[in-house]
Length: 267
Image (tube, rainbow, N blue to C red; front, side, top):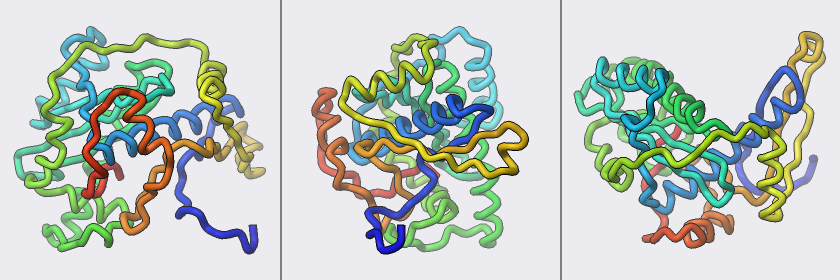
């Protein structure tokens, strides 16, 4: 609204589309859940459980491991599920060859944990071409960028491009793999909204569907859950004031050691 003060820099958190409003809203809610979990986990350097992919007998997980071997990538899937109880994962693709980006990450929350793991991996993988092209477009060099200058996905990806940055994620990479802890929940949006209600949180959405999309059956929304930890892209304006950032780790029994000063690796 005109004259309304800016609280945080707006990005696409919670924006989603679907063939009906229920699907679109569910996707928006799950995106908010995954990003809440990621920012809380990364900034607090939480020692998350690492998922043992070898313990999952599913063909799609087998494909992930085949791809990682073919391209000499390490795959680390971290379970970052919070007090919301909705399965949430970050997948790190680590490349120690010196060819291509060393660190990329993908996020996904979902009611089916296998689908969420696969989604987080594919998100990390499809960013490899984008960041490698940015590197080559800059004549194969990594620009000297200060942390506060990182405000685009390209700058963030190039900051994490070199192998010397991998050690900054040792607090996740070095965790011992464990069997997957979650089961599939078939209840959809009812399950998600019930979770928020139990924690006293309310979800809202705005219909953004243009007539052109409506005519072909596509619905577009922007979903908000005010107290969830926001994601951010501009390191100069990190969002550090939310209660969940500081309270959720304690609630879940994690030890914390202050706020991580390095830029997060999610593009």
